[in-house]
Every structure is written in C-alpha cells, then in structure tokens.
Image 1 (spheres, rainbow, N blue to C red):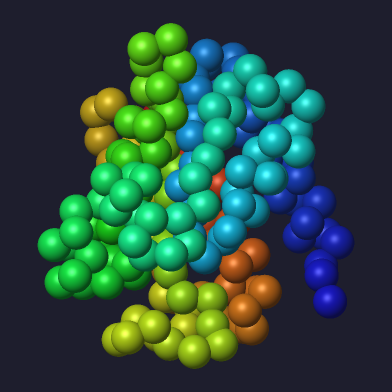
Image 2: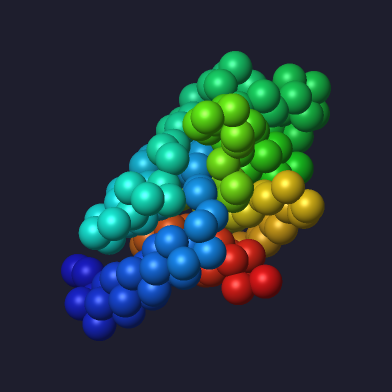
Length: 170
C-alpha cells in the first residue's frame, strides 16, 4: 500500500523543483530504465512544467541505451546496464538528444538499476544508479534500496528527483 504522506512530500518537492527550474530558466530531459517513465511523469504532473521539461527516453532495453542515448557499446558489454558510468552516459546522452532550437537540454537526468524480482547478472535487486549531467559536470549516486519491485522503483524516482534538486541548487 502506498504512503500518502510520503507521496505528498514528493509532490511538494517536485512542485518546488519545477518552480526552481522555471525561475532559473533551465531545461531538463530524462533518460529512464527501471523507472520506466515515472520520473518524467512526476515532473510533468506539475502545472507549468512544459516551460522547462523537454521530454524523455525510456531505454528499458539495454540496446536502446546505445542506439538512442549514445552509451558506449564496449561499456555496456564490459559492465552491463547497471553501472555508474552507464548512468552518467545516459544523463549526458539525453541532454544531447533533447535539442530544441539548436541547444541541448541544460540538464539530463538518468536512472538505471534492478527493481527485481530477480538480479540482473551480478547486479543485485535494489542496486540503482541515478545521474544528473549539465554542461560542466555529471553527478552519479549509487543506491542500495530494499523492498519489493514497486518500492525500489519508487525510491529510484525519489533519488533521481533529489539529485536533480541538488544539481539545480548548485
């Protein structure tokens, strides 16, 4: 069962995040794997998000991480899709493909990990990487979440939004 207090906190935090993006005039694009579009859906739930949200790519299949987001095939072959460098490349890649008026998105956000119920190769259930990239730097965070598939996905969503908020704050 969902936690209405936690969901309310996420709603308030997302609204504040979108308002900060609007005030700063910074655009964002999202690349998602295990969250399957939930990060983008949470951002666009906020009225006025169209001023800053460019769009997103759900690259659930590993091959799409390469073909749509430009993640290096050798990196994917060597480490698989659940790796900090893959998260970084996804965030950087979605910035590059979300071009409007000749300009990439200011920020790229990415999620990759294992929601379960089974491990993926050597990556255990609950291992998640989130990344945020801008023109100057790429931040990546590793998380080890617990709970069922829905709980891991929800925590990954919250972690991605928190890292985006951190990047926007400075």
